[in-house]
Image 1: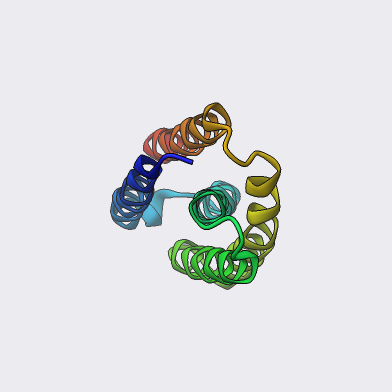
Image 2: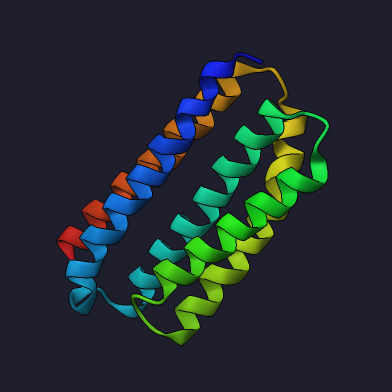
Length: 138
């Protein structure tokens, strides 16, 4: 696997940070259902990207990849869910945990397939953009 894929880590975390700051300023105008969906997308998407990238960089470290993606997914689900209410926080946390467990398995199935990794990154970044645009219209 090419080592240049490590560039996706800062792209993912920077886009999640920008989305968080944007949502923080608009959190009072966002309804419960939209907040739940945004939290699920953010927590699950960040866990998915982290797990797939990590398992492709270090293919025989399944435990470490799973723990790392579970921690990242849980924390991001908590942070995004905390913008809205406790139920959303809990839903984001659970979604981040579940996606963190599944992401290394998905990454191992698509190991050394760069097109798959790029497709996942485009999918996650487009989900962040859709979440931001839906929050703008709320």
